[in-house]
Image 1 (tube, rainbow, N blue to C red):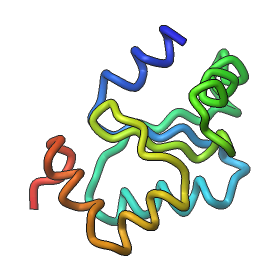
Image 2 (cartoon, one colour):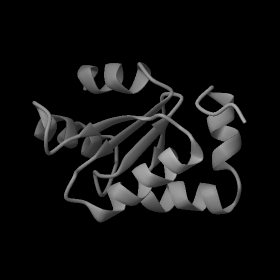
Image 3 (cartoon, rainbow, N blue to C red):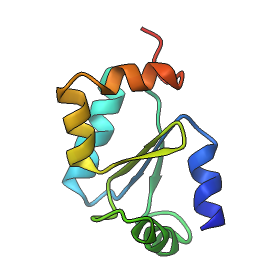
Image 4 (cartoon, one colour):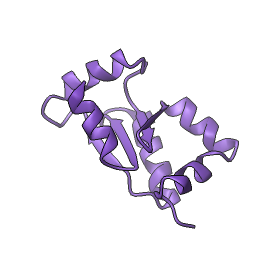
Length: 102
């Protein structure tokens, strides 16, 4: 859990993903299209990916990918991120943490 906290707090936008997950691809594409440069951890490719996935589950993330943290705070999965985007809350949130300048 300590390793997870360190990963989350080091960058303004962190996405935990799996290459095999279509919703992960959608969320990564959304952030990149907005001009955000998120830190992306592909849990099916990195060492200790299963351990990190277990820690995300302990935080209440279900499903465990994609999971987005903005400014060190858990935003949630694809449904939560898309809801924020559709109600025009995502961009102001990204600006507040310095992940987006325009």
